[in-house]
Image 1 (cartoon, rainbow, N blue to C red):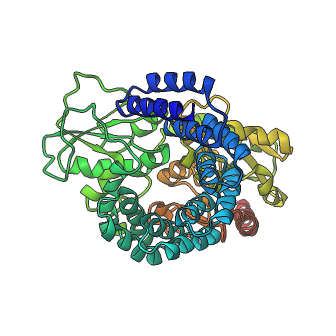
Image 2 (cartoon, helix red, strand yellow):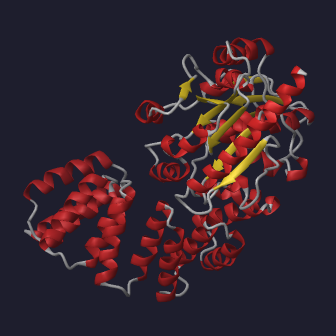
Length: 504
């Protein structure tokens, strides 16, 4: 009987390899109805479900297999991997530790544990595991890649390069290693090499567009040409890179921008942009296209040649209608108006993307962690938070006023930002919106900060109006919150001094 399931498994895999996933899954579902209850068959069923990315079913069968053979490190290992893929980092860590306990000599187990620990933000322990894996199997490319990745997360990008270089020397076409190296270079501020190698993203983590009949712009003459620049990553990335439209315009191009609907109105006022669309009209004439994050490479961008801020804008009437009304509603009947400070404490969890979800867990903070800010006198806190984390206001009872009612896009949000004196936010699209408008923004950065904020320092050439407060280690929100609380007290004192001077 076990042999017949092995034969069935070969048929299922053949269907999968041929691209007929529905038929493969149908055959698999039929096959497990009469699945022999032995450790090997249940393990094989788990492997098949893992092959078709059904993490829940794979986990179920791996657990059945362990019930029949608890001392099998390979089953514990696969259980750890499907837990990781399904977003259960704690379960993944537990399973992989058992695999290592049962077979400490297997480099793969240590390397995969390092990946799990890095996703959890436990970068010191992740480094230890990756180094152990590389020691057990010198020249093991996944181990070398993980060491590089973890060093990058620890803010030691320069140290990561030799590991990436060693991995790439062994596997020159390894897109994950090449892209990791690009991120380290960008984080270090080596933009010339970094942007060039950032193109590896198309073979690593992003899918190039196939619906455009025109060639991609590679830096050639644009005079008299119509170029489409298009959204490719998150909202924040597009808000950051749209500044380069003006440089395309000065080269003689007609610039068409394609972005999701929430960005359309705010980008219509950007210098150099001729047209903004969310859906391409087939009759629209185009000569070239370029993904948004491909512009810095082709324009040979360096920090010294960055277009200045503000490059985003809001009509004065809208500033007054939304921002002015917000301020008026909060400060009327006050003899000495309080400062108004906006808050955003959580990003978009992107549940469809497990890796992005895990990054979001590290960059987002629970609202109660910001409670010390509320102890500073002379401030009214308002929330620009959207999504489920918005409910934390009611749960905590903290004195934060929701000002998002009626917001339909970034143009509305931008207009309301003119009603606050300062925005304090974790690393979300909101910091790019405020920075692009040239408005004051304090960003709380996770310890493994995004490449665009570098590894140290409180300022960034991308946004002169931004101040960065950094976690010294993953999970430590207390340190930056204390720094911000102290800075807010100084901010209030300065504000009141200016008010008194104006009154005199």
